[in-house]
Image (cartoon, rainbow, N blue to C red; front, side):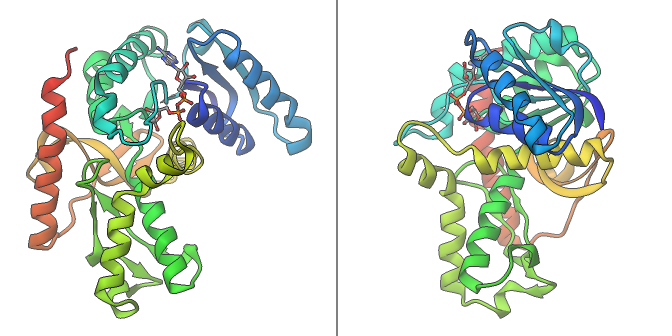
Length: 309
Ligand code: APR
């Protein structure tokens, strides 16, 4: 376990993330920070009071300031507004960019050595804001999107094939939006190429549902967006860092020429361990996948240009 993990934003994603971190005892202390007075304090105390029942010793605290977050090992940023029906992730751009900028300035000042995991949307652009504002190296700024998108894809496939989710390996790359790129060529069921087990039209329908997985939840909830699976995704990445697992996970990473892309955050296969991003893995892609990834990069560049830092 590490000493301290801070979760910024004590809303649906943030509070669920803090709870999962505590239940897994990834840190001695979990600090939830939010601008809403009383919310992080109340949720933090409530979670801490579950500790004797759940059997974890991680201390959960909530605050409106950054003093308690000082010298965090990992900071998970979930602050911002969530989508409502009919909104795209890009509709959140200006509001959330301002919030992530302000949060990043505070983190830079109080936890200069932290590894950042960004969850706020539009994800790839918020990663860029956090990296620009903190000046942290790319090893210490990762975005959570691919783990979530892949989990949705795997869950839908497990359901369609009537097999365990554990036996489905898959990667979803690209930006965290409609242009994401589920890699069919690397989707296997215990090593068996998925195309041998399901016909192409059903697979295409699953890929399409994955692309719109976030919107599907927003449509049900009406007042907000997904948080159980997103918090699971963020915590899986934090766990890989804390336990130095060297996991190969699809994460948004700052590219420096990989996949023909430079100066942009995009979902790619990453080795994640105690140092954060330890390596970007460049895998072979089909011509279609390459074209789809390039298109996805263009879709991330557009809002990136619009953001004011
Ligand atoms: N500093 C800290 N917290 C902030 C700030 C700020 N500057 N501005 C807003 N917040 C807090 C809000 O007070 C709120 O408690 O962020 C929290 C957001 O919580 P929710 O509205 O419940 O939204 P949530 O579902 O958690 O989504 C948060 O994660 O998945 C993404 O798209 C989603 O961008 C959204 C973010």
